[in-house]
Length: 108
Image (cartoon, rainbow, N blue to C red; front, side):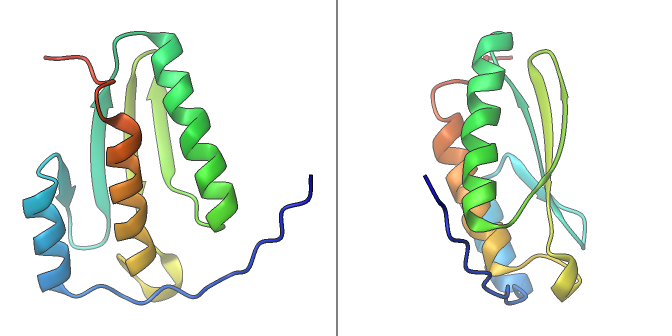
């Protein structure tokens, strides 16, 4: 199979757009430069299933988050270096991540 990637430039998101995302998805935080989300899954297999989905989406979109993982814990950071902060692509990726994580996270 051949995937053809079309690179689309991100558009920097404004404070109002980011605030709306944070209200809708309160597990995300914003540090002035990037969106950050910590996840904890039930087990190792669930963690890697999630990461595989995220990896494929990131590859198809040509936009890759910073991922830190240890067994069943993941920290994700979304930012677009080309715009010097959060872009519309990061916000779309955050929504996609929420869909992938739905029903999989371990209750604390």
